[in-house]
Image 1: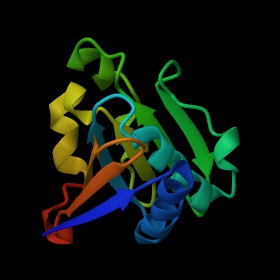
Image 2: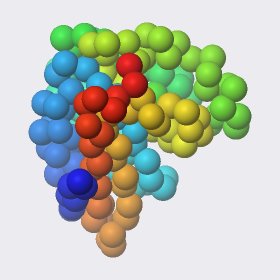
Image 3: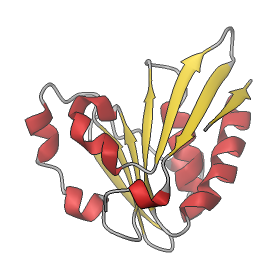
Image 4: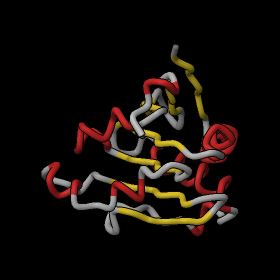
Amino acid sequence: METIWLSHSVEETLALAARFAVRLRGGGAVALQGDLGSGKTCFAKGVVSALSGVEPAEIPSPTFTLVEEYRGEGPIYHVDLYRMRDAREAEELAWDEILAPGAVALVEWPERMEKIIPYCQFRLSFSKEGEGVRRIALAERATSDVCR
């Protein structure tokens, strides 16, 4: 089953992300897919903020650092694989920590390392639907299907 949200502003995207974050209180991995500028990083910032208490404006994009770590009830990892040219580069990241039970992992551009996608309980697909409108499609994998 797929859930569709439409967001008309950054503030709306952050609010949707905060509501979604409740599902991640016990941990989980999220694949964030979509074109550049479609809202992935904004949504990730909203989730990180809701779980860690850090203001969204204080949360940098991990495009150049690859991984940013935060603390909430457990570790929160925001991963951006955009700059990865080869899946082998991405494999060098500390996936055992990023995908550990109780950790939250938000992975942008997971298709750069396809084998990470089966580890994601949630898959969010972002697209631009017009001037300032973003479509966010949520697909959730049954918990028994999650490879942890």
